[in-house]
Image 1 (tube, rainbow, N blue to C red):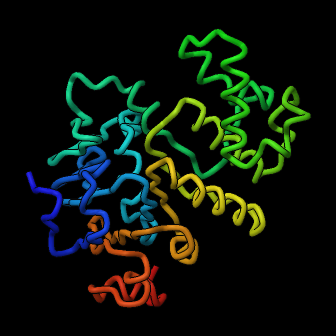
Image 2: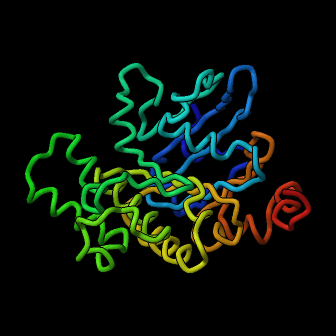
Length: 271
């Protein structure tokens, strides 16, 4: 097992975060769908309260890796880790003691397409609390308001909490899904192309929200939009053909990458 300051040749960790133990530690990870290997020997640390962006062309493995982090891939027939480990706060995700439901509360997920429940705005946010067994209306009311405020949606919906969530705009629905994720108090938030279905104004609102959430959460964002990665992330990991080519401070990745493949992708030579 590597120590925190031991960086492999294709990764670089800023000295300002070396005081922190990683929230997520990925070592020598191979991942397969059946016989098709889609991740190869991935080594990566993700630190508390940073925004990490995964970039790379379609099919490079970035969404697969994201879904490994809360075991969403368990739901896919034939999906499996070949070699390697993923630890979150020192716990091996595939240890038999890990409760997957608890894991997915700690490691929340926001999907590419907003997926509100066919319920009221209030019930969308309250649902996760209710299935945890919380019955106090006062506690739920407070958590619903807090989560909607954190997701920058409260002022827009406070007078229509009992209306169907499908009446919200696409950008509002995505922020509602973020509020739903926040309500169950995760520590890590995974976002898979959270703005790809949104217009530029709604995208701006979600990006602003993501930057605000960094104060409390570790955030990992998969994006095809390199400009978005440049605007919101602290560090960026570039993937190609299932391999982590390079991970570094976002500014360095975009202005002075170490690897030619990274430079070719950033400059638009392929993708």
